[in-house]
Length: 245
Image 1 (cartoon, rainbow, N blue to C red):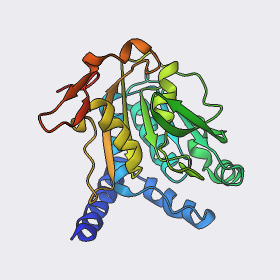
Image 2: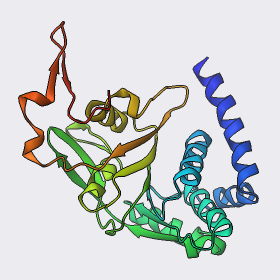
Image 3: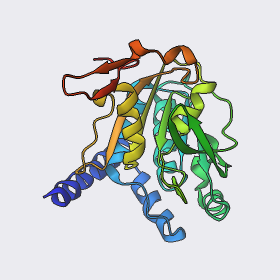
């Protein structure tokens, strides 16, 4: 049943993207012939398009370059056509040199003005009691949206999480950061642990989650006091510091 729902939703989301961004589906089909990328699922792409059109961020961060880069760029172009004062840009991070080369070579010329593809080998990222991986070399820009789909987050110590969404909090100025996670269940788990489950609802039938979270300095030791923890009647600890509810 889960796979049936997922296939149906992906088909619908593909149709919505084609209606919203005319021509991008043909570009995606052509791109896949030049690249061995599996691509981001349509559900995730449509979630991203909706969020960007709604919030209109001028700085967009993509963690994991691929066919999704063209969809983000096409969304930026749509906003520019609707509002000449909008000056959006996609910063696309790729951690693997070979994939970075392929993506840089195969990105259609029509999208290059809206996209900068940057090689950022993965590096460890530690935040409180969480361990993850982020891209290095992320430019210091005021990102308002992030598509979280990389880098690889497992190693000899087991599973961690994709941490770019927290790394950029060191320099972004926006009070709220919007984004979408493609799969990456461990990353959504960290978001839910810190902010509560309502901030990023995740279902296996979607294999994706959208989120809007406040920018916080997680390294501030003042955020670690006994008052930040709630103990349920059955003895379960809940970190409540940043939860909305």
